[in-house]
Length: 501
Image (cartoon, rainbow, N blue to C red; front, side):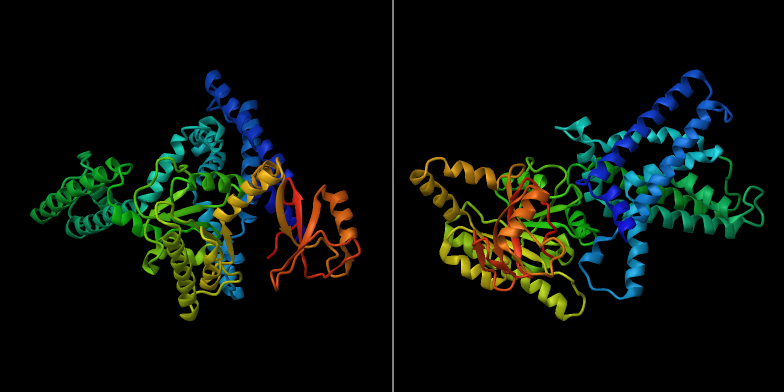
């Protein structure tokens, strides 16, 4: 288990040191491989399999094969951390999840690159150049490839429909021409010849190597030609309007079929929420998917790596679009264009709707979660805090009260607001909640734990949190006994203790 955890961290946890070492080694091999490829092309030895350059290139490809194999085998489907499954279901999920992970675009590029080990497929070595797209620093500001990928991702249902139609036409056309002329036509010797003729006819390429000879065969050809015209028009329409948000209903429907798991759902959006998005991108791991559900079209200021769904989070029928059943956390942002009481009423309604939706799925037996959805709600009026908690919010942020308290305290204690702001800002010294380090089953004093945490992790222990009553105790006496179930509140530049489960 320890070996698997180390391999998993090396390929799937960017915050670890071993991940950075492995990633740096892979990048070095990529640049070396690209350099060898360019040198082989320049020297004209690209086809010499026994050359020194070709042998060195094969060695690098073997390293790539080992790297992608370990990356796929160490992948853990996120559904395993959310749902309580039987052993057969876990096994199926392991297989299906790894296959789904392998089918992602960047992993497919790596897989095709490795296939260049086969001599007949040496031309696939050129695909290694596409691995350069893994870096975000090449397009730090505009990110054109992220926008292109987002456009195709949000319209993949129409593409599936178009390719399904094409496959059906090829199947019917090829099978029909083979049944009609397979015994008499000299160039249709197999079913594969029929499929080839149907595909060539539909795409209007017209090589002319196969031509129907009978009247029924020509009639089939005419039908296939007309169907091909409609199919090409369909593809042209989808490709031409993929970035213009055409086929909105189909695009929203595909979110119901998305594979987001363990993601964060943000309910509601306003101009001030952009700062929230920036902080979330900075705080959360790079692999975390963030989905925004709000009414209206996508704000152009929203980062391209974030998903946007046009929907009303106060309606249960809209929550399927963002796969709330598979989400790990949800944040309800208060609207700013209405009075505070009306804004809080909307927030409470959204919280109630989210909880009722999940409860209905659980009662129907379609949802068995290990961990409940963690729901955070923003409230503008302190009088509505208990309403939000009663509706089902795990945490309530009184944004207006907190802001005014900082202002008042800054007037009484100059400089305190700046200090509190730096503590609450991502990237600086921040507040964290974690479980006790091992051995966590033995009683200890607050002072002993504080000294141990400072010495081992350079973190400052400031208080204790009771997970049962949700009471917090700050700065207790050094001799205060700490129950093993208590969680630690500490200040650090990054999370150094395991978070509460």
